[in-house]
Length: 347
Image (tube, rainbow, N blue to C red):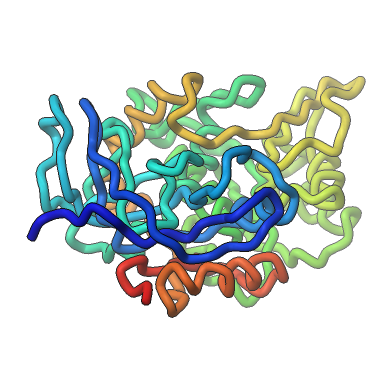
């Protein structure tokens, strides 16, 4: 069946404006690119923040969305790794032809991973941004700990008997940070979450799940008891001012706090403890080579179950359901679950 020339897309009409489903042209892949027919697009908190706060995007109407999985529709010149019909997952970027809240998206083939037959396309869309944000923070962020990645030579299990804390373990990024910490050998892997999610997070690799409602003082006491002292690395997958303050208090001298939002704590204190925010977009120049290596190894990591997809909830209505899903994210009504939509179901 021939590729259509027009497609449905969810368009942000103006800065801090409203979303509306509209039509736009289906782009054609250039050299090194793939055109993907999106089977599922994932929702992230950054999507509602762009709309509410008017950040990151300046040209309108704009297509948002950076998580997706689907099927290769067309292959650009020079691409040999993929063929039409392959099931894949990828991370888009905030550019209208390359974002994921639409039925067809262009993507550089270097940042695409084949989806194993054991995973659904919905599950595939739960992984990309959370994985790269977790991975860049631990292994590639300037100012971060720059641990050796577990898919690099000597990286798997390298950090045995080294404790790590993940604040917000049941967030999408937190669940991937836990899984990567396990692959790297960290132990104990201590995380905070709602205790109803304890079994799920232990399945991902957490050794100790602490109640997210503990006071900062009680949290510090528990971490010291479990880890035998303060820790050198804390990954704050929530990064609100109060979680950053509590996380910073867990650091040993010289320790590093990784945040997914702008730092609220001092960049560095007299004990040499530092805070570094993470830029997890994998196509950025500083992340590109790291990202290519990650995506080359990702199918094998998914096949073996070393990296597991998140629990997925499909929001009905296709692209028109995105506004409902983003409202749930904005109102903190989502826990230990990734919301996705199926663009092909758009009416």
